[in-house]
Structures are given as structure tokens and as C-alpha cells.
Length: 152
Image 1 (cartoon, helix red, strand yellow):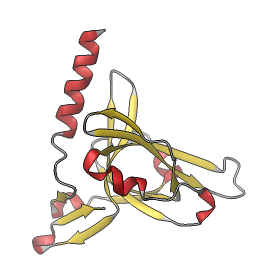
Image 2 (cartoon, one colour; image 1 turned 90 degrees about the horizontal axis):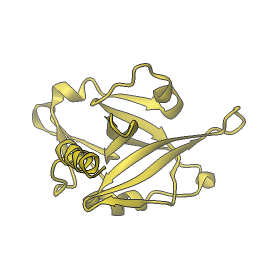
Image 3 (tube, one colour; image 1 turned 120 degrees about the vertical axis):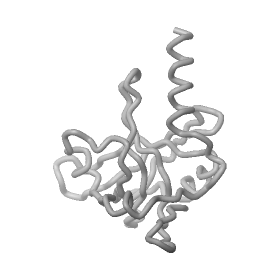
Image 4 (spheres, helix red, strand yellow; image 1 turned 45 degrees about the vertical axis):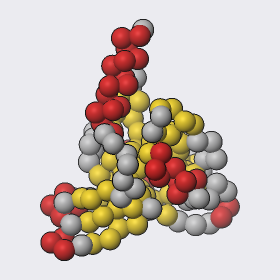
């Protein structure tokens, strides 16, 4: 049991690295492959584009944000589609400590009517069978040479 916990902690540390910076720089070549999905379309992809950066359209976040690790929080983003068979869809997300304030500033009411796009990397913890989106931010700034910075 302790060995599994230690392996999970090591995996998260390796996957996430340091979260001191509140902005993520993305190479132009990588950014050209970024696709933005409606939440339902992303969930239907088989296989999921693991380790790739994607954009996801959503309407609000769940008010519950859990502090899982010293530098990481778990939450979820939701999409509301009025009149469809399943009105609500969600994706589990991980947010760095540096970005949790900006994440918490997003609306928690599905009736707000806002539409957002968040960028993140799809990751999976194989041992826990847990797939999530590691959030990078909502703002995109293009720099010299095509390099992109994603921030909140």
C-alpha cells in the first residue's frame, strides 16, 4: 500500500514538475497540433490524445476544489447543453497551486450562460485508472517565432 502511494506521488511529481510559473510556454510546432473540442466530442475520442495539449469548451466549474497534493488541486469543468438527452458533461481537472486562484474565479453557476475555452494536457494515471486534464490556462499569447504562452 505504501509502495503504491509512493509510486503515485513520484509519478505526479514527474508528470507535473515544478509549478512555480503561472504560464506555460509551448513551441510553435506543438501548438500547431492543438485542437479545440466540445467536451462531448473530446470524451468520445477513442483513443484519447494522451499527453497532447487540447482546448476544451465549457460553461462553468464545479464549486468543489480538493487539495490533493502540496502543489496540486483537483476540480472539474462542466458543460451544459439544454434540451439534449444528457444535459451535463464534465471532465476532471488538476490545477497547480499557482493557478488555483484563477481557476476558482471561473463561474460555478451553469445558468451564467458563459462559454470558455481552457487549454490543458490530457494525462492518465495508469495505476489509479484516472484520466484528467492538467490545466494550463485560458489565455493564449503568441510570441516571436510562433512560440505560444498559455496563462490565466
